[in-house]
Image (tube, rainbow, N blue to C red; front, side, top):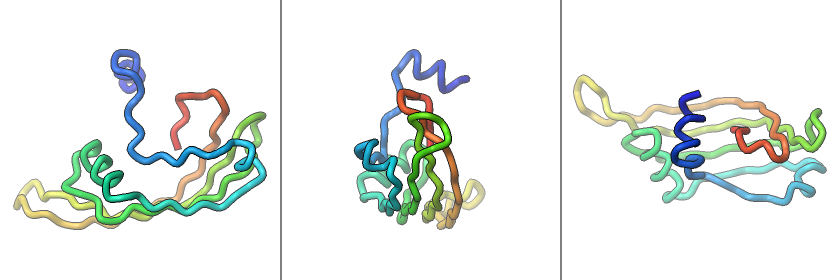
Length: 113
């Protein structure tokens, strides 16, 4: 709810990592690999208050969703995040591996993958 309030005041947050594609091509099914650029990783680091990101890769399968005009996304995310220890002030690397699954619906600007 807080995000919705902020968006009402400031507009939607910036898209630090975006790969626009034609909906028609994706609805037939496709596998994608995404690697963030240095600039994208810097913007994501700033947004999430990290010391840095040295790796950000995702693999996902895209297919027609169960909802009319929707797309089903399923994939994995691997990243190496650089954080600062609150006790020592020293920087350290934290690996991140996650699986995700979601459905995006055409015209639903609130959908987040």
